[in-house]
Length: 317
Image (tube, rainbow, N blue to C red; front, side, top):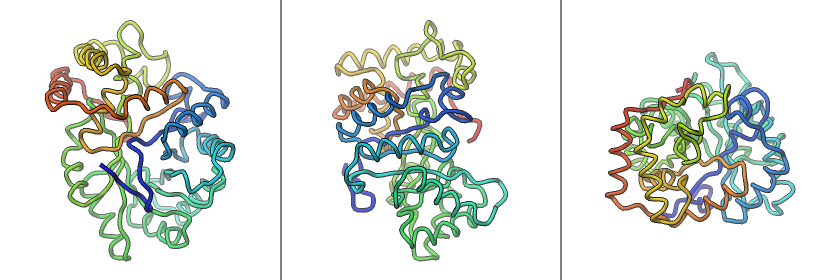
C-alpha cells in the first residue's frame, strides 16, 4: 500500500528515536542503557541507506537531546533535506499556556537545524482546541506542514478534525500505542482512520523489546530502568508461548524475531514506529520489509497474545 505525506511516499516504517536522548526521559532512565553519538550516527546512515527516510522524535526525548542528535545526523548525512521526512511532538501542560506551542516549534526547528517539520504532533490531547488553534499560524507559514494527534481517543480525534476543518484544514494522522499486547483498544480507532483516510502510526510495537525475542525470563530488561519496572519476569513467563511462536515464524521466514510483531502491525494497516539504536537493528528491519504473514499466522499471534492475559498500557495513556 502506497501512502503519502506532503506528496512524498511514506516508507513502510517510521524510525523512532525515543532511546537516543540522555537525561530525563532519555535512554538510561527509560531503557537502562546509553548509546554513543558515533553509534547513533552509524545507525542513521545504515537505516537511511536502506530507504528509511521517515524519522520520529519529540521535544521530551532526553529533553531535546534526541532532536539535537537527529539534527546532527541529518546535517552530516543528508545533502537535500527534501529527501527526508521529520516528525516531532510537543507535550503541552494540562493547563493551556499561550505561546508554548509556538515556542516549542521554533526550538525543535533550531535543535534539528531544519526549516520545516513535516508532521507535528500534539503529544497529549490536553486543552485540545487552544493548542491546535495556536499551531495553525505555523502551519500557514510552513514551519510545520501537517498536524497529528497522539495518545488520543475517538472523541478527541473528531474534535481535532472539527477544529481544523472549521479553519479549512485537515488532521493528517494519529499516533497511538499499538502492539500485540496493546491491540484491542485501538480497533475502533484503526477502523475510523481507514474510513477518514487518516494515517495511523503505532508506537511501541515491540513493547520496548519485550516482543523482540532478545529478552525473556532468562534475560530480563536492565535493572532499575523504567521498562524493567513495568515488564518483569512474571510477565515474560506469561507471554512465553507467544514468544516461542514468534521464533517459529522467524525461522520460517529466515528473519530476526523482532520483525514478526512489526509485520503483524503492518498487516493491520498501521505504520509501525520502530526504535533503532544499532546498525544491526537497521539491517534486520530492512530484511523484514517484504514479509507478509498469512491470515492464519496473524490469528495465532493474536490468540496467543490474548491467552497470555498480558496487556500493556503506559502510565501516560
